[in-house]
Amino acid sequence: MLDVLTVLLTLGGLVFFAGATMGILRFPDFYTRLHAAGKLDTLGALLTMAGLAVYNLDPFSMATLLTSLKIGLAVGFIFIASPTATHAIVDAGVRAGLRPWVKQEDEQQ
Picture 1 (cartoon, rainbow, N blue to C red):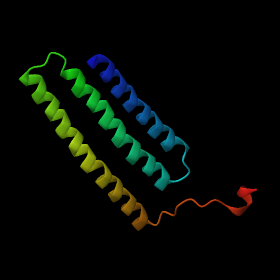
Picture 2 (picture 1 turned 90 degrees about the vertical axis):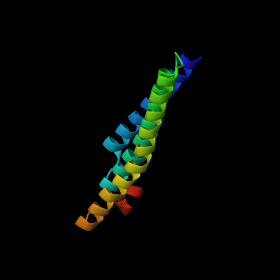
Picture 3 (picture 1 turned 45 degrees about the horizontal axis):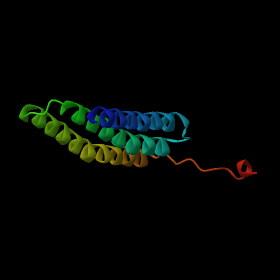
Picture 4 (picture 1 turned 90 degrees about the horizontal axis):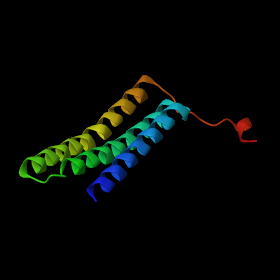
């Protein structure tokens, strides 16, 4: 049962990483690309590391529980650091004068 949960969490994380990669490659400007990277990479890391923590618990002992708790602390750090870093990078882009992409009127037709 834990193997199925491990595979589902890990594959879910990989799907979100793939979505972030597509967003970085396909979106038109700096801000939308960074939005895709900031949101989807954070969730992809959560799911992938949760899969790792569940996989680690298979022969349950205090050592494997401690290792899974350490993985949980790393996930907590990612949840704090990733949005903070994304905000700092966007702020640097605003200060550097990067303008967001705006759809032109003739492209709408």
